[in-house]
Length: 389
Image (cartoon, rainbow, N blue to C red; front, side):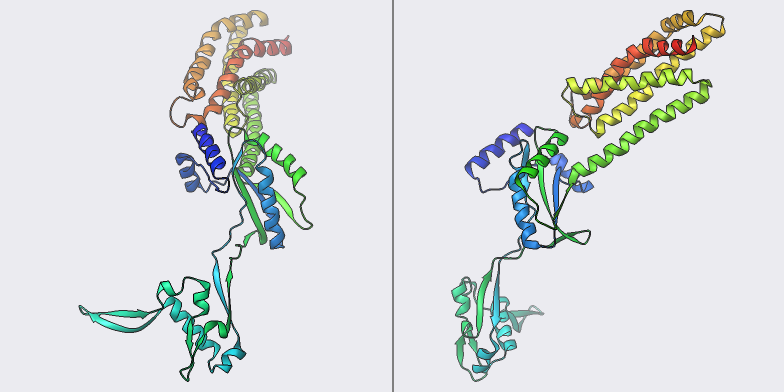
């Protein structure tokens, strides 16, 4: 769980500050592998100056570590393994009567071996590889003392014809859109993404000054959620518009769709109130719950106003028709809303494995329908009465 991960992370960081650890859930990690899900936080830097890019990446990582709730940070700078570099001096090689190619071949055979012969074993030819023992090539001094034989049979040390040095490794170059970049990643614990990103922006503005020519972009799961949020917000507005148009065609009057849609839209206040009192966030999942609330509340409003039209057709006055339809439709409206609320209750209480993923949706639906009971029975008929009187 998140609490166990936080406790382990604190103990490891206090005992081994230089050790970098990352805690991921089995389910979330598996889903991330299958769907190529990015890290929750990704800050991508772009610059053509590799050294400046990597220095700034480390500065950004140290800065976001100070933000509460940000854990498992990674600068994104990957250094390849160390290597030994041989730079042959052609003039020195010529004095010993060997060519640079002869020296390179000797070093290659000593390090990697050479299949100089073969033996026949049970009808199969097995290559015999000759190379210098590992114990004789484990240090730089041993490599410098590697014996090279000239064409005249003279032996000399490798360091006499070549400069030998250890290269600590080069940083890997990553490009995004043909631009050299590096991505600083992190995870979030105990906080929502929106407020965490806002604090990261403030912290970076205070701690890190980007060099000339360097740009910064926010990516990762935050970027994907922002795109999904915009798409679902558009879907929510489109759902309201389509409900209004369908009601307008069905009732052939503006009074009915205005009364029904206004009640449905105001019921979204119950969604926000439910999320607020449960300390949940307005995210993609809760937006899906909003769309569900629009449909259910609109259906309840249709039940109410359809009964009103029936009573008016029988000769009842508008006020009397509203009262009678309220008495007639209160039971089906309550049954519909309570069935949906009780069905969502286990999810809202996060009962069962994986219920946390859909918990905001259930809270949004329950909050919206609880308020919609009042709007369906009182607000929608009132708006309809004001327009028709």
